[in-house]
Image 1 (spheres, rainbow, N blue to C red):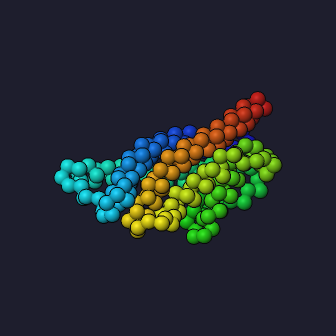
Image 2 (cartoon, rainbow, N blue to C red):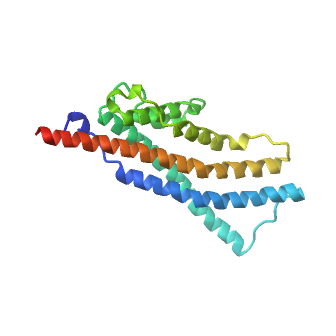
Amino acid sequence: MNDQQIGFRDPTSLTRTTKGFLYASIPLALLSVAGSWRNYWWHANTGGPPPSLEGPFLGLLVLFAIPVMVVALGSAILVLQWIYRANYNARALGATRMVFTPGWAVGWYFIPIANFWKPYQAMKEICRASLRPSRWWEEKAPSLLPLWWGLWLLTSGAEGVTWTASAEEVESMSEVIRQALQVPLALVMVSIINRVHMMQMAHYRTRDAEDVDDE
């Protein structure tokens, strides 16, 4: 096995767990959409706030909020871990001249203003380097990548959408949009994760087999 591949870390377990959390976020997002739509409908039709939930319904709402927060936080952490690992493994497979380090592929998400384009560039680099590590700069990024980033920006900025409605309706509809977009965002992210994972594992197995034949 060559020196670069010695550092390769099998991402199968991390990939499987990350996808599991993303899939789990979909039904939770749909349930959240239903609740937010109820609030919007009530504001639009009555002009007042929806009635407060009481008794067992309030208890169910509190219980529902717990898995939503756990899945949302877990998904965010796992996706960032996966991005770090994918960048690291691309380098371990022989990709050179990469601009973004594993740390900054994650770190740019937390830098204001720059997080509008730097994370996209880092993910684009990971995808291209995973496709052909030796000359990744000659490859094109997956067609799904702009869609993924567009959805990410929309979910991040949905609360800033301007509507010709009351403040309550704006807040309710913004929440409906943000939560609804979480569904295609999760599906597109899973697709990208699958593609990068399969490409990296294919390169790893091929090079591992070649090293065995050389011995």
